[in-house]
Length: 85
Image (cartoon, rainbow, N blue to C red; front, top):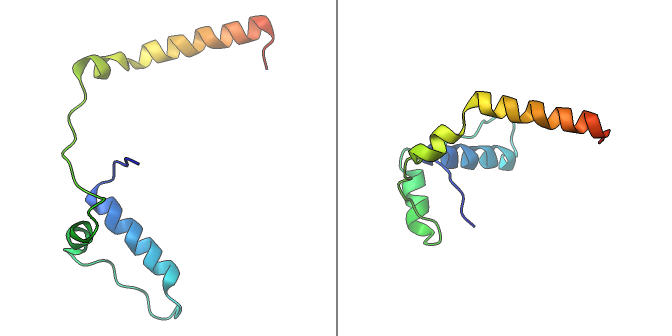
């Protein structure tokens, strides 16, 4: 499985899981240390970091907000015309 997770997201998820494991609610858990994610990744070969490529210009410009509004307007008109629910 491929998940696009940032290093702060991984640390945040670990901290949330640790909060659930704390039995003594009077002692809040400490967040993961500065190098926790790096050590975690070193110990789990099935997980690794890669630098994401920037989105291609064609894909970026394909998401024109007005085009999306127009498409959904046409879709709504077809749904209404044909009584689709």
